[in-house]
Length: 352
Image 1 (cartoon, rainbow, N blue to C red):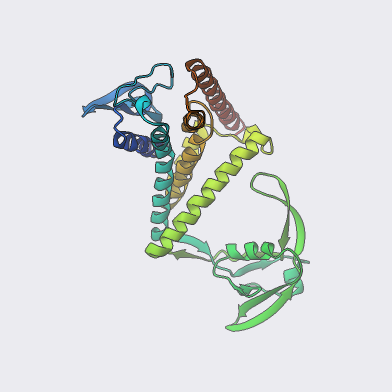
Image 2 (tube, rainbow, N blue to C red):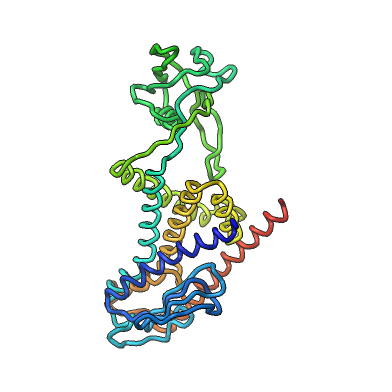
């Protein structure tokens, strides 16, 4: 059941991506011949207007085939009025940007829904105080509630570490609540060696406490939800851009790259954990698809945008030969990444 839900989620995300391309293409007067969810043999199709709407056998992607645009052979072009090739470069760029943009919009909407279902937040209540830590030296106790750090009001546990590490040196002032009384404490954080989410070594300031585990469901409302959705979409985008950058520079090992098996597996797990987890992960995948399609790799939206920017700057399109060989190189790169992801997935499965 979880795998079925995962495939539905992936199909919906791909549908929105392709719908973005389709909508702007039609607004620009471009004929769309095929709108397909999935690849391979068509198992269902229906012609509506001039477009064949299809569901294909392999539900791991999708495509929109516009008149005069063929990624398998970029030399197959048409200059009819309703062709992709007859449009100005800026119009083509808008069509290309529309797919990734739709993914960001979908993620934003999902985060808005999460914000109004209720986001679980840890309360800033101390659960344990570590031995020989700044917190113990300052006599911080179990069940103390942290109200502020250096004058900044604290609402949720996650804000404590962020605030402490934003203060690069010196003591910090805590206002805590204990037995319905406010108490001021002064601590000198300890600097430790740690690792970030990319397994890179970092230095972090700590005071030596852990959370009690008490949570609250926070419902943000409409305006708060807009702010929350914007922040989360932005954070997800930066995270994925940074991950790609670190993969390219070698800061993150390629064995961290996951393929379709990992995506389906994690989406399946998220669906079994509840609707909130499923929405969170679906939003992240949607942003992921949007970001990756903006990479300047021929055969991706970003590659086509790069060709059109070149045409704007030079006043002429790349030659047919150049387009063909760069597109083939792009496909080789994409298939290489897909096989690497699949190889890593299989290794993880074998390794348990």
